[in-house]
Image (cartoon, rainbow, N blue to C red):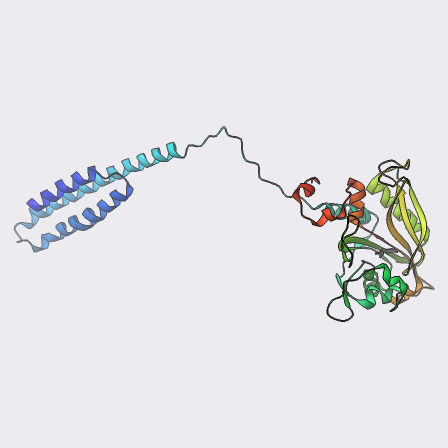
Length: 340
Ligand code: DAH
């Protein structure tokens, strides 16, 4: 009995000096679950006559220590909350930190504007592979082996003979025609192209192109002209004038190059247009009969137009970017200038 009393005194005294939650937990383990538990179980070893008195007292001690523990634990919880409120003080008047937003690459933005315009004109988007075979990139586009026009495109070849990185999106024309023949076609073919060239302000080894192809039973040069004028006005402004010059591409006949009046000087002559008043925006023409036939279309019955443009070039004209290397150099100071 006296041990029980001593235990109670000791336990209460020690509970007084428990300074934090860890100490309280240690106290709980040591006394309530340890010493006291053992003291309660002692009752079985006592002579039967002493058991009721001892048992009653043991239960009282147990109840008292339990209550003392609950009170101390609650008080400690209160103190812990107080401590955390003062140490992690939160200043609700501070302005928030805005989440940084990413943005689309200027090329992606330009591509999407181009897609939107051609979608309105009824063109669908068709994609084909960046890895091509020699035959589709050149041969089927009316450039048999050793054709001098192949020199217009310096080419990255792979280690596999006859397999190369497409130098332009034009081989996509063959893929669409072979897939859709003999249906009429109205598509654009966007994608990355590669050329084995020295990188300079004006030329890159990789760049996008957007190819266009329309085929039907009565597609004419007037349709091509109307389409391109509508495109230029939608992209660059209502008042744009378009000029057509004759040109040469092996896969179109006749071939043309299209200029528009300079967006900076409207034709007066300035640095951007090199005093000419005109900016070249794309190459185009009527699909060559050989190419139509290679795509499965009978040139006696079908005709078509095609065009190819460079979105990076268009972005350079739009934003007066004077160095094409900016596009892939990943300089955030450049990229961040193009919002949205
Ligand atoms: N493929 C040509 C190039 O890379 C661009 C081009 C010109 C595409 C005339 C055409 C076209 O479809 O008709 O320079």
